Image (cartoon, rainbow, N blue to C red):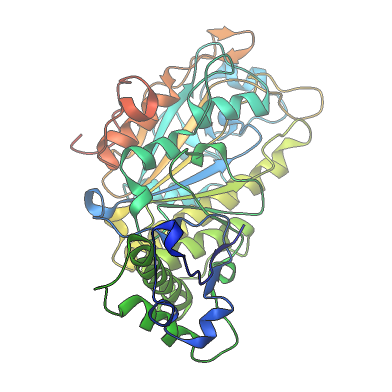
Length: 422
């Protein structure tokens, strides 16, 4: 979808009369003024005051159902090795979290964050009566409601709306990726762009070399005879041009402190770092990595996936800190469910329930949060959850984004204790 402004001349019968010369400002605008290569016109709104320290949340969706038991590993537990004689990770290979738990050896990036006090691992996250369908479980995580309840919007969309972010000049949130926009970003009042690359999100202007000056002239001219519509077009044109120029200059001004991994996720998170460095006031960035549905031949595939996430996230955290914005950044990595405790006959694991959620950034209570789900107390072969996923959201909302919980989650969930000083 493109957002376009075309020159209109309203007649007296509509109650509005705009001087055509003043409205156009330049003859070249008679064809078209501007368009954005985005999926929604949120950047064309009038600017408003920025919310609560301008903190940033980056959401990394690990789609497919990550095997949390081979991610955060109870490697000293005999029940773990008995349930997974072929795919268990050996104690000598894990990256230590504490005396009982370790990270998968491929998660060196996450282990580095842990050593730096920048990683909180929330254990046993899920919800009551877990659903093993990818689509239904992800919808529950995205909306915070089950299918027999009303799902009109997503939890991030409700956050954006509750904070009045429809009026921000810049997109309040951005989805980076080729797939359909996550339902978590859905809102009835705030439009969120989806882009595949930084190049796609730029101002598209006519061929005339004077078009930008014409837009500036339109947005800056006297308002003594302006109507509300003209004022809207003036503000929209100015804001669109300014946002576009920041986006276009992001790659010029930004110099990464280190190389990002040559993966799709690495490139997406590098784009996030560029946009943060450009001064864009976007509050939420959403990215997704697929492939965690490891029913067969899990060991090698899972190692690649975990390495991809760990390396990309740790690079982002280090880079944004080096750029001076580290105290504004929080990264949350989640999956729609974990896997069964017992391995299957195909050297893989099937759909399960509870799993870990990772939070990365400064100001966290680093380390494992909560108890690892016991392997001798299962529900239909699945780990029991000890933390409702909405308690993680509640912590992010209340302690990080500094907003009320109930308007977003529908109830006052007790925030999980993951932030220092919370």
